Amino acid sequence: MNLTNNEELAFTTNKLTKTDDAWLDLMSEENVSEALRFHRSFPEYDVTPMRRLSHLAKYLGVKSIHVKDESYRFGLNAFKVLGGSYAMAKHIAKQTGKSVDDLPFKVLSSEKLREEIGQTTFYTATDGNHGRGVAWAANRLGQKAVVRMPRGSAETRRANIAKEGAEVTIEDLNYDECVRLAYSQSKQDPHSVMIQDTAWRGYTDVPAWIMQGYGTLAMEADRQLIADGVECPTHIIIQAGVGSLAGSVIGYFANKYKDCAPTMCVIEAGAANCLYRSALRDDGKLVKVRGKLDTIMAGLACGAPNTISWDILRNHAAGFASAPDWMSACGTRIYGLPLQGDIPIISGESGSVPMGYLFSIMMYKRYEYIREALNLNSKSRILLVSTEGNTDPSRFREIVWTGLYGIRHRGEEVIK
Image (cartoon, rainbow, N blue to C red; front, side, top):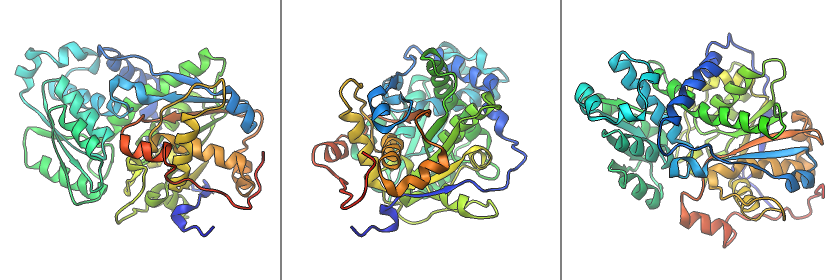
C-alpha cells in the first residue's frame, strides 16, 4: 500500500532544550481548583465518566487503560465549554474587580450583573465544539456571541451553534484565517472580547484562562483515577489542535506529580501537525502549517500553536506524533465496538485519535520503536481523553457504518 505523508504515522521524541518553565504554574492545583469551583456552580455540572477498558488493556498487553469520556459534558457532547465559560467569567471578574469565586453561575446570569457590566459580545472562531460552548455560555449568561467557522465545517455543527442564539457563519477560510477574522471584528466593537484558545503576542490572558478551565477535566480525571486505585498514570496520550488542552492536561499532571510525572505524548492530525513539526526543529521555534488543513479531525485542524501551551509541552511532553485520518477512524470503531465486557464509548473523530494511536503502536511491529521510546509495557497505566461524542452524525455514520478510512495492513506483521 502506498501512503502519503499524511497517511502515515510519524513520531519524534522530545529533544528540545528546556526553558525556564514560566507558564507551568498556570496549571497548579490552586488555579485549577478555582476553575472547578466555578464549573460546579452551573446547574448542568456533573463529573463526566471515567471508563476502564480492562479487556482491551489485557489484549494490548498493558496494565490498565482509562478513558475520560467528555461526550457527557454539560449536555454539549464535548469538553470545550469548560474553557470558554471560565474565560468569560475571568473576563467579567477583571471588569468588575471581583474574584471568580464571587461570580458563580447565579450571579453571572443575574439581571443585576447585566445592569452593572452591560451587554458584552463574545467573538470566537471554531470548527464547532468551542463555538458551541461559547455560544451556550453566552446564552446562559444573557450575553451575545459571534462565531466564525472555517470552510468545510459541518452544517450540523453550525446549526447547533445557531440554536444557542449566536450569530454564526461558515467562511471560505481555514481555521487560522477565521481566528484572524473574528479577532479583527471584535476590535471594531468596544463592548466585545475575543474568546480564543490560541495565544499570540499581546493576547495571552484569555487563552491562559481557557487552559485553566480545561483543568477541570484534568483534576476530575486525577481524582477518578485515584478512586479506582491508580495513584498516578504512567502514561498520558493527549490530542492537540492548537495545543491548549494538551498543555492543560500535561501541565496539571506535571505540576502535581513532579517526582513521578507520567510519560506524556501529544498527538495531532497529520494535515495540521504544527507541534510535531516544531518539535523536529533544533531551536524550539514554532512552525505554522498553512493551507486547507484537510482532515476528518476537524477539531484538530489548527495550524498555529498556542504559544503558552507550547512552552509547557516542550518542557514536559516526552514525544510528539502526527497521525493519519485512518488512525482516528480506527479509534472511533474500537471505542464503539469494544471487547466483550468493556463499556462502549461514542467518540467523534477528534476524540478518538489517541485510542487509534495506542492501538496501532501496540499492535503493529513497524511501530515497535515508538513503544520502546515511550516505555509502554505490561506495567503501563494509560490515560486517554475522548474529547467529543458524535458531533457530526453524517461523518460518524460514514466511519462506523460504511468503513470510511478503513485500512488493511497487507503483509504487515502484528503482535497478536
